[in-house]
Length: 219
Image 1 (cartoon, rainbow, N blue to C red):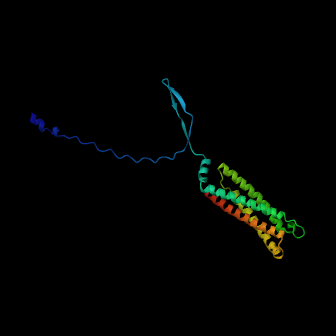
Image 2 (cartoon, rainbow, N blue to C red):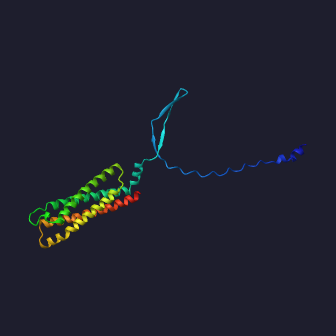
């Protein structure tokens, strides 16, 4: 009997190890956290004991926050450059306007006798008012964090820059002829106003180019 138990196949049975578990799938990428806003903790009672619970609401970022994100870095630098250019154009046009208006010395040294100088004075007034208003508008929009370029910025800078370059170019030949004959306070003031007109034109032309680039990048 003992020999039969020893020869039994159950006496030599060795349990097999279980198979290894299947590999786990790779973890999902963590989602981008949205803007969260914590509220005041609220309490509830259970079994005579008070428990505090903090509620957290998840909200998507607002359009102004997205605009501020996109305006960081290069956008803010472009806005500052455009603001400086328009301020410089306003100052140049103001000085040019003042110089032309002061040329009332009588006889031939009166700017009212020349159509080119009257046109230069009128364009300088328009350029000064436009550039000053646009610079102030740009500064206020930058303070609010929404300084995107509009079609008015792009088209207005081009139109006023065109007026400035035509007025300065029209007044240049007659001024050169005058200064070839005589150099006095009148011709010096007119020549300085023409130079300032060209400077204001360059500032507004560069501002129009930057406004177009910023508008294209925004869309």
